[in-house]
Image 1 (cartoon, rainbow, N blue to C red):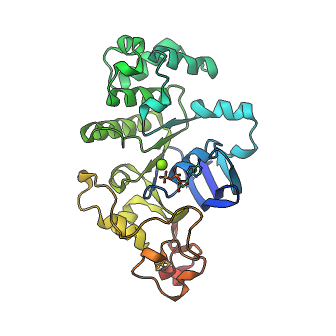
Image 2: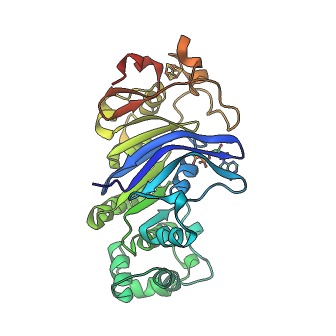
Length: 317
Ligand SMILES: Nc1ncnc2c1ncn2[C@@H]1O[C@H](COP(=O)(O)OP(=O)(O)O)[C@@H](O)[C@H]1O
Ligand code: SF4
Ligand SMILES: [Mg+2]
């Protein structure tokens, strides 16, 4: 089966300064893949790069490629990219208002998607269906509303309905609940996962919250200072995180339902342009030893499980 998304050795820079370095992961159809890490690790840049969007100004693809259902995003024509964005891959952002135009009714914003992309069904029926499905019993009232007339939770439901409207193969959800009240956060995540299963699409879930990964993702990639330092299925990751940074993240998770903020490890993520040589986690790592100032390769302690840490150097498969 062709992967929905295949990110291969992706390095993105601003000018010559690397932001992400050699990031690789694969998202299978119907899977929820979580990328987790502290703020500033390069999660959003990785997410946007999957849509062919690089940071402005000066963003560059330094190395690697991204395949969406086998198609190279960075070789696609501008016309093809426009088709992919919003229809085949859709995005849900942290702040629902950033995805919506304050000057247009919700109806107008949904209708615009149909005008912009091909759709074989009945647009009115589909709008009614998705709005009901995200929990609105009165779709006509919602369609007639402007964004400022709806609460944050309602707006994020509208954004989810926009994201689902054209039956995408992939939804990229970048901190989809971070801006919402805790009670609404859980409702929105449950809804997103239910709909993902119904529609059979894959989700790339980007979050700083390891609790969301534990609860909802099938596979996880842990990001640190532009590197993907661990890549596993979630159940084995939760039982036994390999990387000292991942262990720190897990130590901050006594109870999944508490949805704790990540503040587990002393020190801070180094900023772009100031990454240390070798393992970028070394200044914060209590287990650092001799080889850690050299570039860390990827080790495979078990099949299909990857970690970038010299503690596992015996484990090359
Ligand atoms: N447009 C930009 N120009 C320059 N630097 C940027 C830009 N966008 C992000 N960065 C830098 O890239 C790093 C990664 O950012 P980002 O992907 O937004 O991290 P995350 O989503 O994990 O918080 C950060 O250090 C940030 O300061
Ligand atoms: S490679 Fe070394 S410094 Fe980096 S996480 Fe592993 S033990 Fe710590
Ligand atoms: Mg971000």
